[in-house]
Image 1 (cartoon, helix red, strand yellow):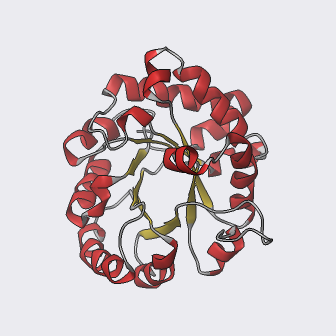
Image 2 (image 1 turned 45 degrees about the horizontal axis):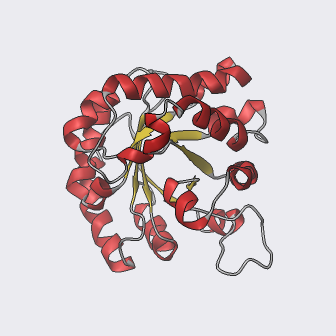
Length: 255
């Protein structure tokens, strides 16, 4: 982990937790992270819980993120939420292009090319998710896939804003499977991701935080967080318990 970049631990709850459950979780988490210096903490929650969580975390080190958004500010898009709607309630950022959004809802690299700058324009911090399938991993196609995702996702982001985008590398074959990339694999890929940003602007690449995601747990977090090009984690299932996420945050602080 580079000392220039503050590590970020983002817990992605996916479709879990009612408002009551979310508020109980936050009350349990806040005391555990109040003294953890040098780590930024994000909770990526369902739309229904966002306002309550923003209110419950004001003045704390925990920021609240949405799990997706539409690229447009408004329009005939039934069921969608826009970036200005999120920023209005003081949501801090948004996850974009998670593999589940890509797989189940057809979110394309072309769509993300519009969503990332829309998030930035609304003052939201985007976490752009990238990753390869097990078949692509086995075929040695990882770098080609990630290069395409990065070039498209950042295609309409101004060079001077590249460092404002967080990139989360999630090998799809490791999400929810219990499999995890080895530290060497994680470092190689996260270093490759940073090099892709450096192709556009080397100085911005040094600012860009690259997270690892995919079966991150307290017992592997220390090794992952100590890698030079891993600047934190996007945590799925392990983020659903406040104690477990707090242990991963502690690991990031130690790394």
